[in-house]
Image (tube, rainbow, N blue to C red; front, side):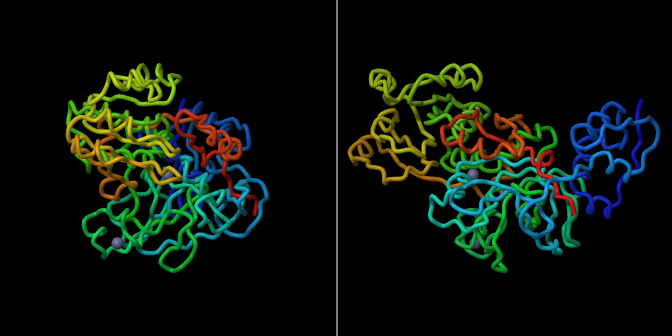
Length: 429
Ligand SMILES: [Zn+2]
Ligand SMILES: [Zn+2]
């Protein structure tokens, strides 16, 4: 029992982007033929009615009618419904804003999923002192292409698209030239930044976005879509240092400090690259998970001096993901000759490091911040090839304030991902 739905025109795709993206994701064989039961279930899940779907043909507008769901009234004016914080309480609530019209180089994307990053939390509460409100966070975005400008080539309506931590850069500086555009001083961040016209940027806790195609990423089709979003920040933040610091050769002995959103991705990449991975954590409560689920090879408790000493000089390199204050000396002790430790977390205070262990082992300490667009694409392709995705807890937008409280306590495995498409709806006109 199947239903053949007439394929939408570009105009229809654009005018109901949410329903178009649901249609695209349901249409797995790309033939616009659906099981009756699948449409019935989708109408129940995404729409507001519980209709009887009959086999036969359906106009695209009738499909839209099944999937449309009116939202709730909210503050603000504009064509894009978001969830925003209005002040440093960080409390999120629905807010409408206006996105720019797509220009010739732009992609219009319907946001389907958006990951919740620790930096969202810091900026919501103005903990870095630079937040302008209203703030719409979200820089781990997985969406569907619903429209594009006339100069955009190589993309099609319905393609899966990712947007990460930044959406533009100067395109002229040394960093941009060598494709490390994440280090460009003119980098335009996805939210809490200003675009080249001086307008505030707003992130993925919103129905849709307009992004220059040069800063859009292709998402491999085989990856589970809801678990892809965090790759755009947590993924690239750990992949990039593994590549840049040449810690990606099979057999390399890698330590991963901290097993949160970033750390668990470092373990997954390490295993996919054929490394020998040791997780270093403050307590043993993540031990079973690290060894049995994430398949790490070893697990060390940093507070257990005996154990740390028994593993002295056992590692070639370390990715340190911890953002809380912590001792560096015990970690340096784990490194073999020429070892390196790369920080991707930002503790609030400067770290204190004695020189002698650095000299004695010819050790180096480095840092790394996100990754460039070119490398992010390489990371996504690597994930497609090795089926690497983030381990996520999917939540509706309405749960975000609770999720943020839980994030403060690190009570998540390992990333919250907001089901934007299914829970952020345009309000009634
Ligand atoms: Zn992030
Ligand atoms: Zn630049």
